[in-house]
Amino acid sequence: MSNKPAIVPKSILFPFLLLSTCFAMWGLSNNMTDPLVKAFTGIFTDLSIKQTAFIQNAFYGAYFCLAIPGAIIARKYGYKAGILFGLGMYIVGGLLFYPASIMKEYAPFLFAFWVLAGGLSILETSANPYIIAMGPEETATQRLNIAQSFNPIGSLIGLFVCKFAILQKLEVVKGNITEGMDAAALDAVQTEQLSIVMTPYLIAALVLIILWVLIAANKKMPSATEHDSKTHFSITIKQLLTTPNYVFAVVAQFFYVGAQITVWTYTLHYITGQLGIEDSQAMNYHMGAIISFALSRWVFSALMLRFKPSTLLLIAAAGGIALCCSVVFIGGIVGVYSLVAVSACMSLMFPTIFGLGSRGLGEATKLGASGLIMAILGGALITTFQGGLIDTFLDGAKSEGAALGVAAAKSYIVPIVCFIVIAAYAFYCKKNKIEDRMA
Picture 1 (cartoon, one colour):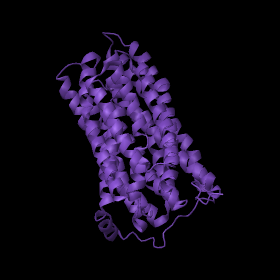
Picture 2 (cartoon, one colour):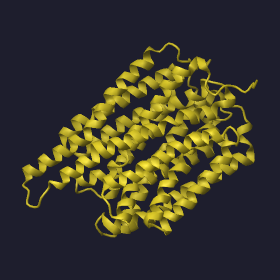
Picture 3 (cartoon, rainbow, N blue to C red):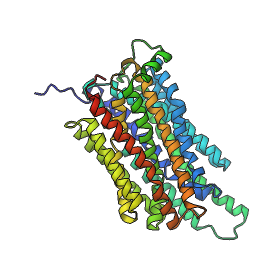
Picture 4 (spheres, rainbow, N blue to C red):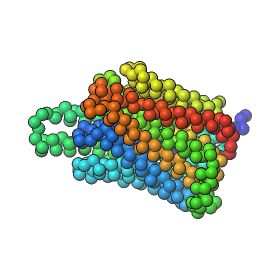
């Protein structure tokens, strides 16, 4: 008989599954959104690649803005309240796509993305540490990796929805556009395009209402409340800023999310340019990347039973560096498959950095979680930076065809730098034996 603590105790199995569904739902939203960066260039034709990346600014900028309010809600009212508040805001953001599609302007969509992602920020700020707190300390990182394994399932669903319910339909509409169409006809086309984009988000919001009710009504959700619900903001911030492991984890998380979002945001730009295919065809490769991401997360979760998380993180970061070098310097079909394989390396990074960064924080864990979520701002800043690089490398050429493939390839030097930072953090954790500290 083994005395090893259970990763997910039977008493919390159903609440654990409900929370894991939240991980899937924000994966759906994240990956349904990434390909739209390119799709919006065909809807609002006056936008540059950098301007279309403002979607990611709005999306991941909201994570930065709402993470601390989310932590305050979680600390004052408990994790469950934070999750319900975050889900509610997510629902409102999805519903806002309807008026945005009627207004036919880019800015209302950015606002809808901001509200939706703000809900995700609060949701993640509560859900990640809640998963850590709802079981034994010794198995916290493994438990979080299992919960995070539901995230790519949602991501894959989001990509299927984006491919079949958005991109393919947009391509059909685009094929109906002819030279010399009058303003009224072009306006009707844009109305149809925006309706195609809006519908999946509206449906997702309706599904989320059901999840919100199930979580609100569940009486077996562990309370995981602190003895002192006061925020003690300044004292806690000082504690966090003087904890080297935590500060390094926030930096590593910033660069990880930047790497993930840049890799996925410009996947269609790279693949369509390198192989000369349509967006919907390139989505097949993107879905392959998410499948490898999903399967690898389960594999890494199993490997953590035998290897330390920091060891696996270091190996994955080294793999990411090597594969991105192939993307930049080799290109073609080899570069495309290398880009797909990068997702396998990224699969364990977010939860592992989060789990390692949370080690030893004690009562500061809730506010500390907000810092690790605020680091998602990297997805906004680094993605926009890479978009600007692509515009620069295009040097006035049209953002399509071989020129786009070459420009996108050069821009993948950005995630190489990100993976180097992650490797440095993994080495730091190994050297300082962070896994041996009590959570």
